[in-house]
Amino acid sequence: MNGLRTSFPAVSRNEALARGLAAQFLMLMDPTVEELSDVKTAVSEAVTNAVVHAYRGRKGEVSLEFSEADGELTVSVSDTGRGIEDVELARTPFYTTAPEAERTGLGFAVMEAFMDSVEVESAPGRGTRVIMKKRIGGNA
Amino acid sequence: MLLIREGGVLTAVLSGELDEHSAASVRREIDSALDGGGAERLVFDLGGVTFMDSAGIGVLLGRYRKTAAAGGSMGIINARGGVDRLLRMSGVYTLCDKRRDER
Image (cartoon, rainbow over all chains, first blue to last red; front, side):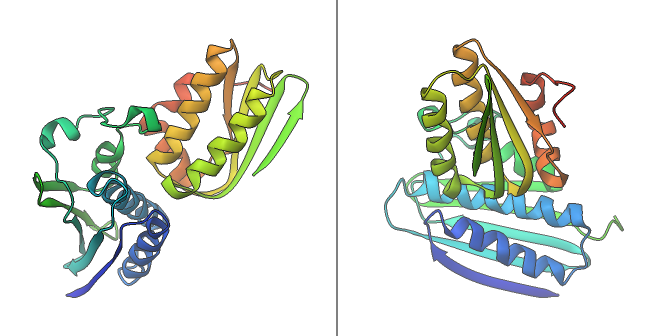
């Protein structure tokens, strides 16, 4: 068992910070190059969602948690922003609330493709938590 | 980023990490080159890109729309590892045509 819990302001330059932390934590689990890339990408998508959508330019915090148990990584990315009205719709590939800003609507699809499971809990006005799991080390 | 113009081909040589934070400046630079006119083809050389997420896909798709609206085409070359896998899963390669002289 191992874990890391941190939080940081929801600003775009911290997307790279979150990826770096993900890489550092995952290195303790002896990942393949591909697993490292997958997790960094999924974390980047979840944190970008919090930065772009949760607070819409207002100040806020993103909480990031990593934990490891029996070769499985769990990542939790949460915010206390505006929340998602319809999670199922938000998870639909290419659905976006901000097409004018060239948002592709692929964030959740990428998380789903690169992690084993993605769970989204959200309450309008209260915030969103994304919990992603992935078995590491190719010993699934 | 390095922008190379050869005849009607504009090649954008990207490097480092392409995410939501870095997307804006990449978008701005390429658009200003495209707005200068004369580009019939836009090629993204992603050989130096070490990380890309869906914000990067947004940059590519946005530039593709702009180029295609003016009758042009798009190419993507040298994508490696996770960048290549992301491009495959998002279907972006299907918007490109491959030219033999582009590596």
